[in-house]
Image (cartoon, rainbow, N blue to C red; front, side):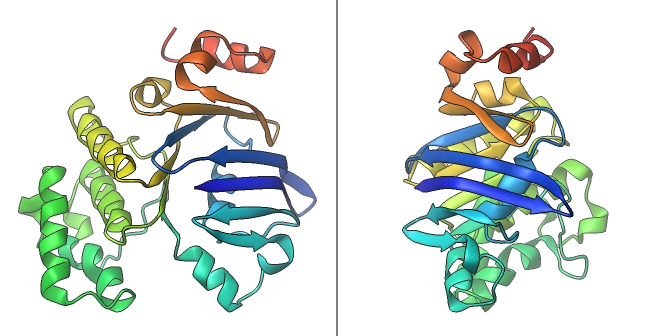
Length: 247
């Protein structure tokens, strides 16, 4: 579960998030849309404890992070970070590790999962996204879409309570996007929470239970996916959707 209250953060005099409030229950998938530069990625960074904020609180999986703790290196923030997994738009795969090595690195060294068990779990995940045959390749030997799938599986391998994804299908064809959609839906159905930032309204329409629209660093509105797409309340949401790929 995610609860955000009054989240505000400013970097070098620019307000990146302004009084953001949000609540998302376990087992739900939230899609976040909006123009570039309006705080969507910043929100993900705050949610996983990687970016400090100046006001508000964030609760993820029963762990609450307050503004005054968000920039510290305390035990509180380390425990908070363990609740979430994030897939960045720039994937940050380890270039010196194989596909299998990238996926098992954190389970083995952070969760102390036995290596053989971590490898079995990783191979099962690779099969779900159709790239098990690449398990011994290095990132530079993969296509952009293959690298993207590896990054998603690396985050899933830690079995986080909350999974955060920034443009997870930007390098995927429609078939592979469908594979990712199915995997994320299975993950959410097992009681986890998923937040996806994407410019692909079409992809989010097929996966998200709820949609949120962000503009000017604020959460303008949030509703069920169908209701937000068919009956947006705010003029800014209506204008954005008028230019989306659904129209």
